[in-house]
Length: 119
Image (cartoon, rainbow, N blue to C red; front, side, top):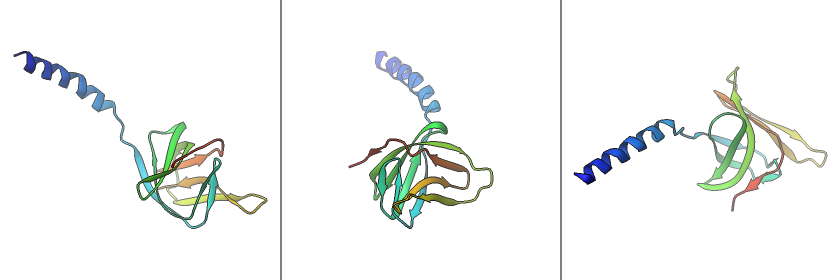
């Protein structure tokens, strides 16, 4: 009887925490050129970009072949015009700097501050 009570209590505690767990959002992005974002250098290629939530304190992960390439602070907001694009600027030395990724429903804007790169 005790084991059934313990199991029922554990389920009651687990269910609310699952209800508040928010799945991570993600998109596949193709970079046609090497870019720098928040100090991280990202080579051309196909990446899975993942983020959790929205607002100015969102972390965005870039992964290639299921391997983390970079973790970048960003702002995630609604994309009012639903246009998909990758916005870059060019530094004086010719390097491309990733400013934003516009997806159908969200815009990910990078402040190009500090970064953490994956190994």
